[in-house]
Image (cartoon, rainbow, N blue to C red):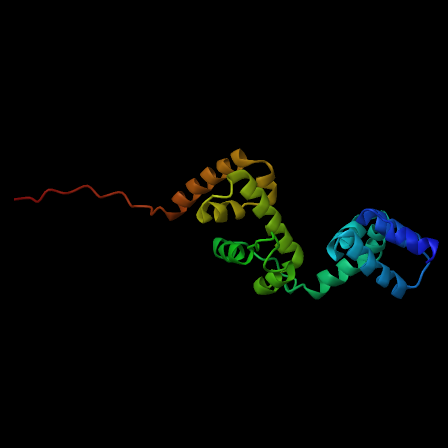
Length: 197
């Protein structure tokens, strides 16, 4: 057994294992065999190694190589907007909430591109709504009614950033405007004329 192989097997933690593996100049097949041996003797599993690997500066930088180009391609491939801006009215926001759920592990049940496809929108548009959703829930709490949450999500992100008092002020103003818009203007009643006897 070489010194590099022994260093891998002697690693005490997944972080130590990643360091030793990076330094070792040995064939990938040998590394794979050593990984199985190390897991068997240390009690750590594949997920532990992957977790340590993803946090290591070397692998972080490798992962970031070409990420801007991958992001650009992803946004282009999954742009379902046809160049039009989607208006997030109450009906669309309600539907968005149905598609924005998370599973028990806290992962979204539908990926951003799947939601974008459902709405004929772009990925940035869905990410924008998800940011607004998180901010609104932070303000209102997890037990907020769907009706109030939908109403909050019809406001711009810049309004939500200013806080609950800013949103409530605009809600009141919006309520007054809706009242005026729905009010029927009535003609003044003509004075009653007495019948002459």
